[in-house]
Image (cartoon, rainbow, N blue to C red; front, side, top):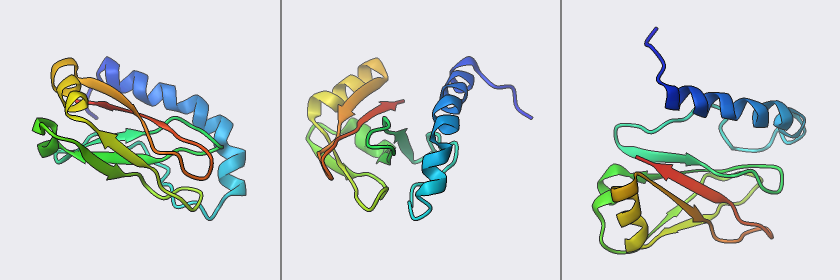
Length: 121
């Protein structure tokens, strides 16, 4: 087993409380298409699991190749609770991601609510 770095440990540990609290919701909403896993960045994409709002979260990802973008781009989240959200990156958001390594973006409103997504390189 590989040694776990501090950042990954904190990410995993921080997800434990929402998972435990969310168990009754997941059981009650078996039709949700939201994956229940420990998703992390891949070789090809930066992945973010949104804040929990209206009892659920969404997954969104941006291709690593888009980080160099100098324009705006839209990305759709995963389907959860029968709906998706759109995450819009501006040129300034991409610049922040490149220089600071992290950016938080609010999604579009759908089904009466929005989510926050934090993307980290």
